[in-house]
Length: 397
Picture (cartoon, rainbow, N blue to C red):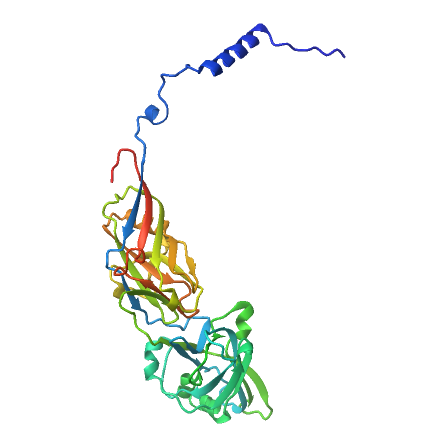
């Protein structure tokens, strides 16, 4: 087969020459035609940067947190935190004769700042009524009997299963008198407690369900003669967790366990509601020497209420405004948190004051505290928001 070579004709050569000349001397084709913003007849958007400083209406307050839904039971003490746990068993076989009873709990983790090697726990009967709505503030109303069982646990074994043999007559009383069963028992640490153990609670499920507090009983069923062994899971359990310090002047507290929450107020009256928030970063100075239980994850969002004392347990924040959480370590002296969605959610409301709630994540699973500087501190320590936003063409701030 014969191949034919294709050559560029005279027209192609002319086009090539023209393009070369245009590249050399500069193209003038359509040089007078409008383009970009000139073509559309629109002005360019304004991109502005700003630094917002907290107005001085910043405040912190403590929260009486119910821990009945927590997957942890707290027992012991840690840097001002103290807790005992209540457990009740009501699903016991009617008319049974108790032969033996063992209370079993399983540790999950430990919170400590010292070097103690062991902790001593004891079980006591509860002689006053309580219910799952109690918080640490109700601790003073709890009456306990003398300890009926005691165990010393090595620090290295805190995640093991712990068993307490209970008096037969006490458990028998739970069967004979339902009111006594409702009161149940308390697990506490002998004072002074060197650290805090976090046990699994009855709220755990799935693969950890076997770690729930339970009562293993050996008994003679009603109307029978042979022994039988059964495992009864707790009907209710609850931690009464307290913290012995109050908020210091000049500081803002955010904590978990016996939690504290902080509200910051910023004046955004100069930002029009049609602004697009490109980026917002909340910065706060930390009193790092007082950070407890680190690392602690902190998040920010819009408060659903104007006043902190009206914040309810079930409705704390606008979840759609939740910023990107940040982890705080023991040595951190400042915090920078991206809160673009938080600010954006507020600006569209066209309200002059923006209230931001700063809280810890997992308030009911751990203990810990971060102490920030408030608006009375030096400028480099107080809360600020570094803001970048844009306005539609033709708008001015």
